[in-house]
Length: 150
Image (cartoon, rainbow, N blue to C red; front, side):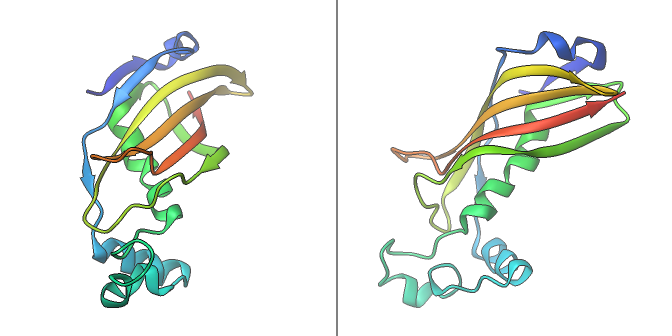
C-alpha cells in the first residue's frame, strides 16, 4: 500500500517502515532490452539455451537491471504531495546477494533510515531490499538516497 504524505511532513519519516511493494516478474524481454541498452550481452543473461547449462541453470537478470527496479518500486511505496521535483540522488552500500533467474518474481521492502534537510528540500536515506519470491536471500540490498524539493 502506498503511503501518502505532504512535503512539510517529510521530516517526520525517519524510522518509518514503508512495507513492501507488489511482485513483478522479470522477463527475458526485459533482460534483452537491458543488455542492448548497456552493451552487456554476456551469455548468462541473453542466451537461454546456453544458460541452462551454466552456473544458475537458467538465464539471470543483470544485477543492475534488478537494482533499477527500485525506481518503479519506490513509486509504489511513497507518494509525496506538494513537491515540484524528485531526484534519485544516489546509492550507498549496494550488494547483490542472490541472482534473479528469468521468470522470478521480485518485490521491494523499504525503511526510511534518515531524513535531512538539504538546500531547498529534504534528502531521504532509505534501506531497500529487493526480495525474490521463495528465495532464501535477497536479490539486492542497497541504501537509496532520494531528494524532494518544494
